[in-house]
Length: 115
Length: 110
Image (cartoon, rainbow over all chains, first blue to last red; front, side, top):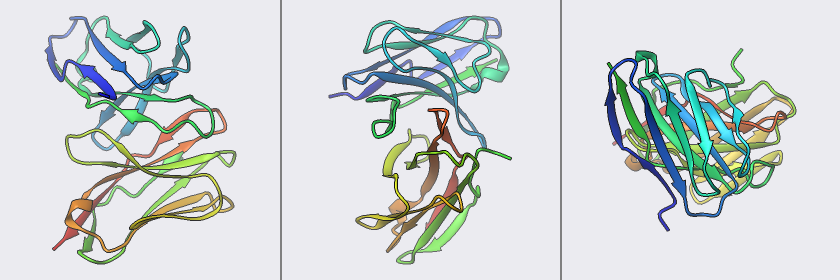
């Protein structure tokens, strides 16, 4: 099992460009998450999907959109990239989002640089 | 006040000693608590989770939870250089969301 995979691993964008970060998991998990990690800020939740067909905003959703394409895949889109979105993006999944099943498994991350 | 607070470190501990990492949280209704380890340039990986007050041991790691004081800690016995990493505390809040602290950087000196 590959666990959680993310593409691309690294991306450079110019301000105003758009891109989609892809995430897939093969653990049959119901819940999926997108985080960004900036130095000294820890992990901040952008969006999450508690189950297929649902998505909800996290702590820092502005400038992002998500799509839960199916149970396996959860994508993050930047419509018009800004330098403030330079960060490392992690996708994660968990069996469920409720107590007892909320342990999260992380993908390897995408390093995004916006010039 | 941050919802989950950790001392950013770095915490320097001699090899073979006990490393003690601390975390406090603000939501008294929080239900479960996690410690993740993150090596530089890598993704977080779960070390332990704890739900009940008291201690939970797994090998060289012990998680301690005190809900009355809203405090959770991680002890690492017989610290090894390979334990050098950033340790993230995470809390499953009463709002059904996982909130991460900003992490404590641990350095084990030979």
